[in-house]
Image: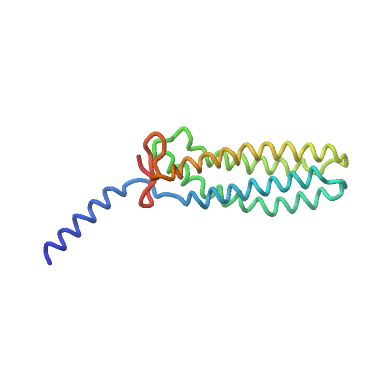
Length: 171
């Protein structure tokens, strides 16, 4: 019995030592949320560029804002832990997910302010296209970062030696 307790204590010590690091965020949830944002942006862009009636612009803009803003808020709330994990894995140069989320939020605010301010349908469509291209670039960056964090299918190793295991980010 005494030997079992000592062995258990030793095993727990090994586990605790191996588990040092930053608590791993839910990368799969973040990636899925980012994909939802990208899909929502795509739908908005398609709707705006196909729009034949300038008066429908405000309704589409408001629908889009109501749908995408909560997604961006959730991504932003998760992004600090994503960056901390990247830092812990030695990938400081790509620990920019919070910055990109903030840029997406600013881009959305700019779009909501600029969209539908003209009665010219071409101007409305041009603004939507500009916004969709900017958001597409940023959601692409976030997808790339999340993919890097998830690592390869064959063991979770990231290039450069970092990995996620046991719910912890470490090098």
